[in-house]
Image (tube, rainbow, N blue to C red):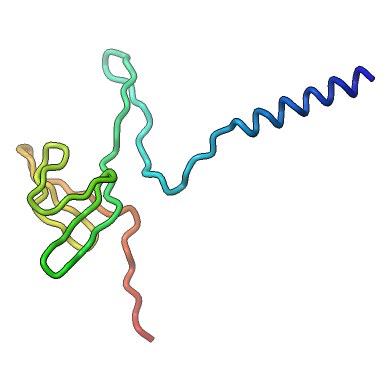
Length: 111
């Protein structure tokens, strides 16, 4: 009888811990893990993540870190100088850099 009660309690706590376990959302943007600075303090480093590019006849826009930007806007202290098919070019005082789409769209040939 003691074994049955113990087993039941053990199963209950195991199931409860599984129910409380957080499941990560695969569509959520990826962020870099915490890194330690020279002083040994932990800080959160956020990646610059380009997730989409939209083209209209007169305008190009990009979604970076869940925010909408267009050419000429300032992102993270850098000016957006160009939005291309699969990348965004940024200019700062130290030079130029680029953000590329997570997974570039592949054009398919018509059959």
